[in-house]
Image 1 (cartoon, chains in turn yellow, cyan):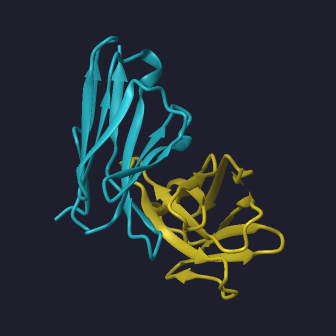
Image 2 (cartoon, rainbow over the protein chains, first blue to last red; image 1 turned 135 degrees about the vertical axis):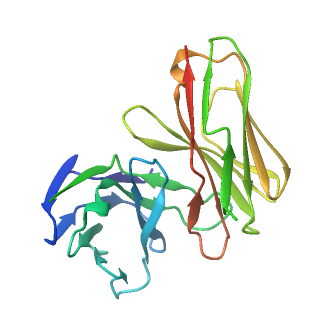
Length: 116
Length: 112
């Protein structure tokens, strides 16, 4: 079964600095999707960024970028120029391949604190 | 024009009661899901439906019964509520081609 591991239960960063959240996963598949979701105190799950495993280029979305290392099964999230609004729980997720039984497998989350 | 909506957002009830949570998506997606987030924030899939057909049932007690009256709705009915059912329940939807799942705002269920 696929598993997703986030080894940092909590992280903190100073406003305007850069922080990297770690994620590793385990799968025997070659084609899959990886996601980072953000959950602020409002509890809404917000998609931050998505990566297709077949794409070698790392995904970026404004201040958010990933370092996708397929061979190492690593998918870290870098947040640049951190803002107070970035404070939230961040979940890494693996999506099982298509075939009728797609689901997201989540890591346990990393709580990010942004200090002013 | 909320994409994925859930009602109610908060639900407080006593043990033994039966309750339902409703979910609607206006994205035209084919697949809908229910996830449970426990007190430690861990999210786990419960069910998925594709075009009103049950696809995934992840060893959830049969007190939980999803119902999909049409492609845009997926409701969750829970019988004989137990203390351990207290959690946040998220509905989500996706279009098969892209696979990205969009979540509703969650329903915080508290069983006393």
